[in-house]
Length: 248
Image 1 (cartoon, rainbow, N blue to C red):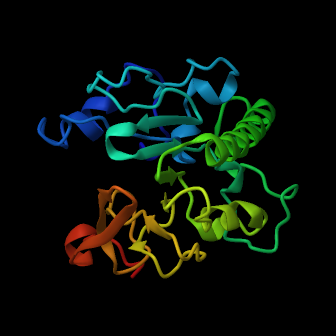
Image 2 (image 1 turned 120 degrees about the horizontal axis):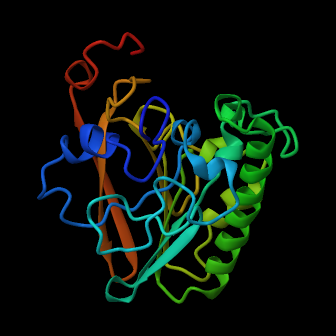
């Protein structure tokens, strides 16, 4: 996420101040696959429009390394050379998923209050949620890849109101391995999430960009094999990563 309020347009200077000037060109020499998080939508024109290309972060050119690769709000990309398919989902409707008692209809994107179009925002996010689950179901059935890498902004425990989604992340009948990654909670672990065993999933929000919600700060490495995605964390001292945070 671009904290605190996202980007206001495709040429927003925060592309420089919060990404290009932070990460060296070598790190940015490969595509950065992305989806929208809650903070990203605050000022983004895409949340007030149903036009696919209205979003400040939407970029369908995988060779354009000057910004993230995000061809749509919900998208997939096949990598036959790795026997892998990547699926990115916009699930911002579940921003309050930490409240496990909420039903699907009770969920809403609370950060619509910070946008320029509160009512339209709720409608747009609802439509993108429906599109997300539809795309995920289609790729589960149609993809021939042995490995699926699925990600959204939210960890798997935020989807209590959609238990079928979590169950599908656990399946191995059509794909040898499904790895799921979500953030939002500022920690890096696979113990706080809802289980998708025998597959794996991680909370990967521990990078110190906004705050720390625990002592596990760092990133996750994924190694892609013919029929398996192996993952492990690389952690740093949380006091180095979040020196001003008192959360942990």
